[in-house]
Image 1 (cartoon, one colour):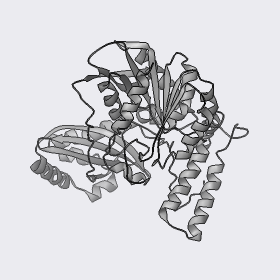
Image 2: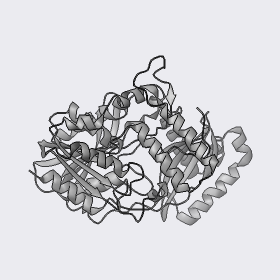
Image 3: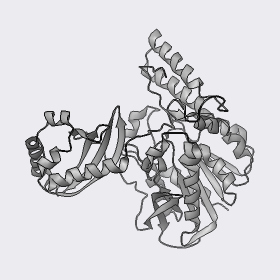
Image 4: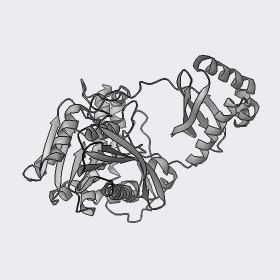
Length: 435
């Protein structure tokens, strides 16, 4: 595929399909630091590739760790917690807890799973628990969502007082999300779960399959494998939570999850309702084109070269408007996603599906959302505005994560801590409790 050098496709539904064995790399990262703690720096040095060994010595490793302990004290816990592709390499983040503080480390592995680098990432702002997250009012129960051969870590947030309470299953947006839908220091699903529980409403949130089983998404797949199968199992889990009112089961889908929420509702007709949070009403292709146009406008680059790059990018994006495979293989990649994925999504019309639903629907949208724009909310309202089972709420100064902002902005906005606004929590709680 032709690449446009100045355009980063801000793919709301982007995937990272890793060929490496994530569990193997996590294990090696943990073992590497176990050797540090044990003072076995020669053995730790053997984890490096031959080229890597020429750039760092065992003595360098010893000095590095000596300096860490002098600053932070002895290590209390060191665990691999995250991963991502970096070109031809694979970066694993190890979170460290020491006597006097915390420190993350990034290990860079090559394709042979040998270390080629070790560095300290810049410290980011940390997550801030919102004021409405009153932990005296609810408890969190760790569990798993079991879906076929997959086991996804999950948390059930349950109000401490009362019974026969509603429960909401939280369905992620795109990409390999954790259960909190963490981005930078922000954890919107954690905020929502705490806010709802403090208001007497339980929830289930779980790690997305694309994070734990990324190696399964290197061939042909659709949203069934990515989202639907696990969402259905999470709903089954929700129905069996002690104290839950089985007639009050809801799904809150964010972004891609919101786009698919009407489809989930058709598969689970006994759902009480669905919440579409920043849900695209347009096709994925249209959304990506709009995102690229927005980024170019944000760059304020009006040169002919940039406009040509935009034109080239749109030409590539347009190739995803396929409704059948034809002679194309199911695993053929278009913008990093298999043809099977595009055919599946292009055959689904979320607005028309929602029109036919009898369940309650609540559609919420932020005006400063640069990923799913206000025009999508207007499309939802135009199509469903006369339906008595549908409610709408628009927040002019909220972004894609439903936090209050001063402007529309860009991806850098997500690196600043900002909780889901209490107004959203209150609106969700009040809507769920309406009879």
